[in-house]
Length: 482
Image 1: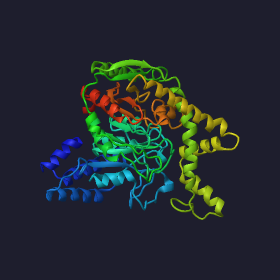
Image 2: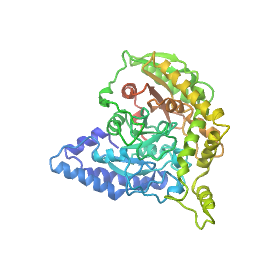
Image 3: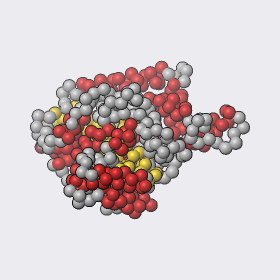
Image 4: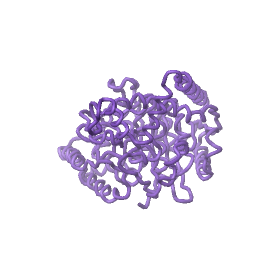
C-alpha cells in the first residue's frame, strides 16, 4: 500500500477517491484475514461513511489534512464509542465504551478512516499475540510464526497492507518488538507525549500509545496528529509539539550515536547481531560519530519490569469483578463466589500469572523487598541513560534478541517469552522515546529490527537518525509475499 503522502496526493489530484482507497483496504482485509487474524473487529460501514465524508469535503473544494481518507487500524485496548473494546479478553467481550479515547478522537477529527480494531495479547500482556482470548495472529512473512506482541495485530496489519498505518500501545516493548518481527517501523513516544485517556490501563507508569507505519515519514505524520497535551490525562506533558517532518533529514553529519555495549552478548542471535553491526556501520557512513556506550544497569530492566508492571496491573485489573461491566459468571452462590468465578473464568493464564505476581509483590511484608527495591533500580537505569545522553544524541541496539519464533514454541515457558523484551523494557522504565525499523533479514527471510533510543522529548533526533538510515537502505521497500 502507498505512503500517506502518495495517497494524499492522489486524493487531491482526484486520481483516487477516499472511498476507493478504503474499499481497497477492506478488500485486502477480506482476502487475508482468514489466514492472518490481525483484526478482532472490522468496522467496514463506519470506515466507508468516514471516507464518504472526506470525498464530500474534496468535492466542496475544502482542504483536507494529510491523514484524511487514510485507512488505519486501532489496537483493541483503546476505547471507541459504540464499538466493542475487548482488550483481547473474555472478561470484556461485550464491553461497548460510552466514550472515545483522546487518540481515536484526534484521528477521527483528522479524517483518518478506522477500518477495524486489531488483535492483541490479553490486556497487552505478552510478546507474541498468542495470549488473546479470541485468536492467534500470524506473521505476514510466515504465518506459522508469531508477529510479536502485544500489538501484534497492529504490526501485522501494516506489514500485510491491510491498512496504511496503525496505532498500538507499548508498556515494555509492545510496539517496537512486533514492529521488528513484522518488518515495519514502530515508535514508542516519550512517556506523557501522547494522551492515555481511553487506553485501558495495564501498567500506568509505563503504558504509552504510539504509531506503526511502513516508513519513518508515515510515523512522523501520525505522531504529529496524536501528540499533545490532554487535561483528561494526569500524566500528559504540557509541551510544545515540534513539526516532526522537519526532522526528516537524510544525513547525520555532526550527530553522535552510541552503541549500547550490554545489548550484545549471550542470548543474542548471531544473524541479528551481524545485521545490527552492519546498520551501525551505515550510520557512520552517513556522517554520524559512532561510539560504544555502557549502560551497566540495562540488564536489570527485565526483573525490575516484572515487579513494577504486574504490581500496577494487579491494582488496575481489580476493577474487573463482574459488578459494573464486562463478563459476569452465571448463577453465583454469593457475592464472593461471583467475584472469584468471574475473574477465574474471565481472565486468561498470563493475566492471572501477572495479577498474582503483582499482588504478592505489593502485599504486607514484601512491598519493601520487591516493589520499593524495583523502583530504586528503575531510577538507576534512568540515571544510566541520562549519563549516556551527555555524550551522544541517539543510542542504538537490536530491538529483539531473535527474529520471529514459531507459534506455540514459547507458550509453555513464560520466562523465555519474557526475554523477547530484553532490549525494549529499559526504555519504558526510563520513559524515553524508542523506535524500531527494519535493518535486514535472517536466513528464513524474517525481518530484523534496529532500535533507536532518544533522550526525553527528543523524538526529532530519533526520527532524523531513523530517516537517514532508512533512505540509504532498501529494507523498508521489502514486502511479505503473503
